Image (cartoon, rainbow, N blue to C red; front, side):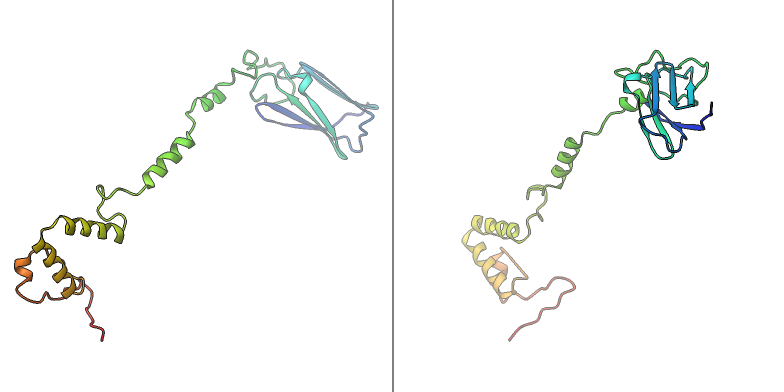
Length: 202
């Protein structure tokens, strides 16, 4: 009876065993799954693993036959790491089957509050909305400035309107005054913004 080299790796939910049986034929391979035992046979080559360190679900276990090895996937009845395939150690999570109750680490991870992406998106979009002119007088650019001046002009008396028109035209749009008494005394001089230079075009 030939012995078969095998190795394993595991996750909390599954344990995968690789049996190195080169050239195994799917038609000849026989596998038996029991809650605490796995048996493999291929002609005279056999491997029996028992007792398993934890219980498995025979209905959900499966295997694949490759050119070099046969891979067996055991589905654990309780989440957790076994640290080996066989042994007398009792299943540490036998009282915690996979399902509504899970291991403390998984339960803690699930207990963490999940991000509400919908709420986060709404919050970002709301914060990106433009402020109203009441909140920020610079919002809206030229159209807001024009409507602001139109409001001032509309609410002004005749002298203030004359002062606004004269000061704006004579200063080339650099000055706007509502004081007719001051504006009526002479030509309103051009006052370009700081850092700018006024040039007259012929």
